[in-house]
Length: 163
Image (cartoon, rainbow, N blue to C red):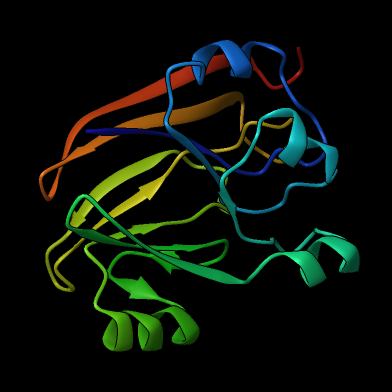
């Protein structure tokens, strides 16, 4: 079993409680709009993709998409994907080529867990962990992956974005 912490849209803000929430995670994945490169080191991020607000320096260091094979599942990480089953053209092409089991993204600032039956994938968005954007509450997510399944999913509310 592998425990994964999912975080997106920090926009340069790192809530100090996140490290405690992720202390039992085997890996931490950031889904873009990092905003401040130091967040990657502070949280010991294992995998990350860049987002549309990230600096050129972050974009040079990180990929736009990440494909991860873990516990018998294929994950596609990206920042901007659209909504299931109507993804943007770039992501539709990736889904056709890569055939992921799970698509994880950020950008919308809306925490989402959805089975996309049309494309045969699970769609996850941990919401936004930062203070910028239209969301009211900040969120992160944890998943457990074991034997070709997501065996547990926890949506963690960090508090109001204004805090």
